[in-house]
Length: 440
Image (cartoon, rainbow, N blue to C red; front, side, top):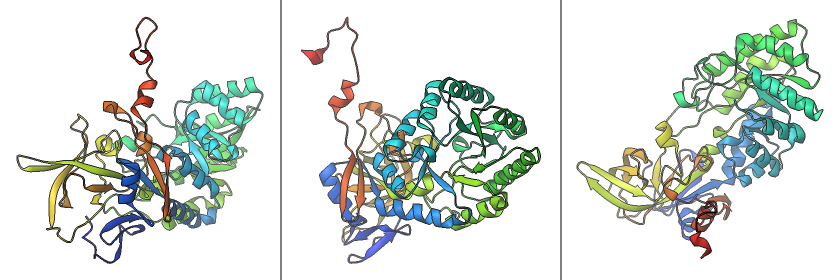
């Protein structure tokens, strides 16, 4: 927990200049979070344009030696305004569903800068992707390869294909976000890749693009990347010795961020690794950052409902819940929680369990967290919530989806409005043999 800042200073948090205290009030860029809470209510996601832009440009600069196609992993944050901002800076998109594909196109990302990944693509999704002209499918099984071939034949259109290989590399991250081991559902065993690539090269409607790899998310060391990339380079050289072209390599994403005090590799070190391992291949390199671009750009703004003491524990009950931010409940993930306002009369720190109002024990954000004293009506900011936050939200307990706000300098706008109860209920339909009380 950051120390209480000087009353008259601008104090950045976690090294992020755009999030700081001014006169004891938390500010994102030049907008007070209290002002957003007054105007929009809570809970609310807030994103910083400046952080999003800075992270993309720094990642691009760090990887410049390989001149990669950067395809943002849409699953990390699919807000249309976030995608539009990234599109304006030249980002492509890594999508895993037809919905994400359609949203990326709507945001202005060209189809020829879109990669379609995912272990279970339906025939209808494949048809749509071929029709709009995506750059490539990252194919995860022989059955999927055959399905793409059939749909390309029906449409009479060629399509780019890369084989996603599974290198059996332990990403040294949470088991639920590890994707590159032989026990996971993802990818094609690297031992089968050459055989299937021959099949791709023999199909007139399949354009062989090369290979892809993705071993997991929230990696905090470069060693697993090096291991996976090195195997991929060996495979490429073997394929080329057989006379087949390998024009591109998709190296996926997965670089982590600091939620607490983790030591995270710098963009520059990651970029240098990519260049040192793949630089001699003369391949187009595709990179798919997600979390590393957007996580620190977002906070979840919440209000204290009440404070509760039970036995030896003190609870702060927030109006945000795990249906709004699932990561702590799903992954036991940690997010720092800090007060939006301080007082000169603060009497030191206390230890609280921060929880939500949902009827599940797993609706707990963090336990025994050190914090300034808090009371009903106080606001808090849940940090590093820009990735896998709003995109994983649900209406569990019949709680409306929360709004999202984009901050840009001294201005802000609601970029997804709060859902009303009427909108929630309108999606339910009664069978024709029941009276509908809404029609009375």
